[in-house]
Picture 1 (tube, rainbow, N blue to C red):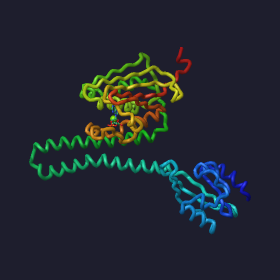
Picture 2 (tube, helix red, strand yellow):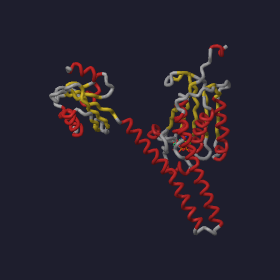
Picture 3 (tube, rainbow, N blue to C red):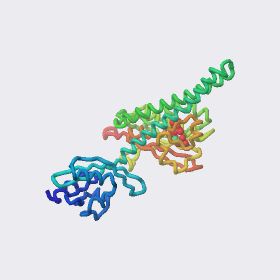
Picture 4 (spheres, protein in one colour):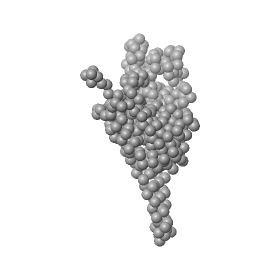
Length: 351
Ligand SMILES: Nc1ncnc2c1ncn2[C@@H]1O[C@H](COP(=O)(O)OP(=O)(O)OP(=O)(O)O)[C@@H](O)[C@H]1O
Ligand SMILES: [Mg+2]
């Protein structure tokens, strides 16, 4: 088989691939391989093209025994390491094919899972350690001290609430992720959903002397929604606006009439939640919806926050094919906009 037959075979592969012939020269490279290894490498000896010892050993061995081999290749093009799974195999009588599969995506997922487990363990360990300390004190030094017992039990109650909240948030997150691909099919008035969230949050608003004002058009605005999930979106966002703005917060909720949203490519409603709080430094904005991301770790924790609220919001909005937009700068308050596709009226409904 001639090299002209090998080249089209490589060109069709979606991953980087090159062919080495019996004279140990690189005789064909597909476009992905050219962008990975560079131009002008055809007819060069494979040692000067591949360079990394593990691949050279694999190719050398395969030339001898023609048995397929796998190894890892690290490229450091743009300053960051990219890992490739390299497969070398023999075809026909004369050729060795070397393929490079980019592993970055998979490695990122593995790293994210590792970070997630570490974060969850850390978040649970703090209240657990506190609880263990209190239990030990109650069993020993404070055994007969009724006053200390009452005080410690109060702290233990709040630590347990914290753990309970964390576990509840984790369960919501995994439930939302599990049905993220199933689009809700029930048509609901978005005003009712917001009103239900406002009712649920009323005690917190009262505690913080917060004033919450809701403005909406008269007519119902229908969206396809999972009632509980969207209520959770609005509850989380209003709760943040109240919690992070300190005492006497002014929180405004505005529901606009449906209009075409270019990013979603369809007609959508926008609900904005704005506050007069401290605002958020723009450097934090891209990471705000990551799990466990908190700007002021210490202060958020004191407020009993776990940093999962906006991650849950993001997943719920993904499921609803909507999006979240955050506008904020330090000292200017914050504005969170929820954009959701609205139910299209059938022509008959318009008459
Ligand atoms: N309206 C806001 N004003 C200022 N900072 C905010 C606002 N909303 C969110 N943040 C910041 O974003 C971080 C992430 O918010 P998120 O709701 O995801 O988590 P949380 O409120 O810390 O915890 P949880 O919602 O799980 O109780 C918060 O810790 C806070 O620092
Ligand atoms: Mg929150």
